[in-house]
Image 1: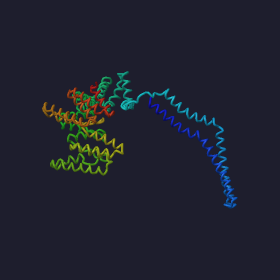
Image 2 (image 1 turned 45 degrees about the vertical axis):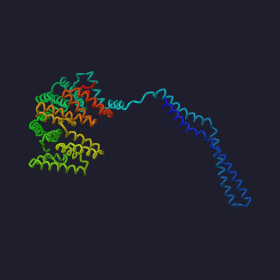
Image 3 (image 1 turned 30 degrees about the vertical axis):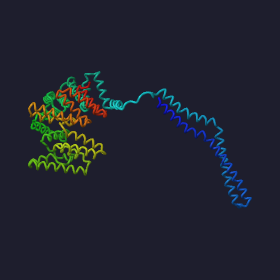
Image 4 (image 1 turned 60 degrees about the horizontal axis):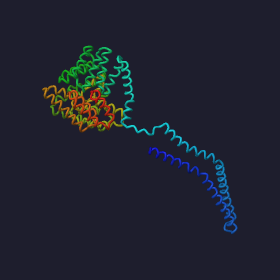
Length: 483
């Protein structure tokens, strides 16, 4: 209430400052007019006295008299105008009254209709409201409301499933895919979609349940691309890189020209050390310059040291060129990918930072770079869908390597990797993707208590970042860790 009283006093002071000069304008004009007339009359008398005393000549006296007379007439006219204005004092009073009534009326209207006593709304609540009112959130909520009333509408679940997957709501995506199969019947595409959702929910690992879904899809349609791709991922995770390479190379051999999923398959082959050069003409359509898959394959005739030096030399040349031409999006993607293949993760991270700086004034190129860079990391996603983002920590490749060890060693290795991720998050608590990976890892290991504790730590670390906190809360709900 004190604040509003201060505001009212400030408003009154401002109105007074405006009205006060207006109320005295007429009086000051009359005082000024009367003073000027007296001065000019004195000047005329003085001219006459100087002329009579012989101090000025006849012509000078006449000229001065004319000038002073002119000013006297002007002053008399001004005084008459002032009197005319004063002839309507009631009109001026009415004008002043309106100037007072307008702010007073506005204040009274606000007190009657407004709510000055309500406290300010916290920023977090406002941001949550904005998020809930965003177009995608509204659409998802509308479809969910529709399905609550019409639970047998398979089309509604078909709309929601890919949206859930893109939003990171993997458990919801799994439930939607299963509902589609129940309501609309089995098909190769639906089984493959279910398998993809299961892989996403398992943090990129092809589980037995996902494997069954992909096998069903291939029985229904041996050419189902998504199922073929993840069958290769499954072979890679089992340590059978030759089988994975055979599956992926077969996909490329049957691929039509400019197949949109072919680059993802070639990237998967490169990650297991079986690079395949892009077809002729790919460079013209945008393949970045720098060390190509063919060049790396040609280096196999050299000694290990010479081969490593050759590859690193080509990567260094690409890095030097990008310092001169930072607008080359494909070049930056190639550089990041090369560093990752070489195992120089620090240089890969530094290259991503440099690329973002170079492309910061070009939003479209920056967005293209981020999407492509994400596609080059971690377990590849299905060729028909957006690849899953890789999060630092134990990856599917790490789990695959562990499969060659004894049960005890494998368990120790996995727990060590999860512990390293947990330690890193203590140093960098702002990595929401890292927290999500840690929560999933604990759940896969059956360590629910640790997952609950990690969720609490993550919420504390991200408390000042509402957008990241929302992502984390979605993950916590999907894993059933919400209290």
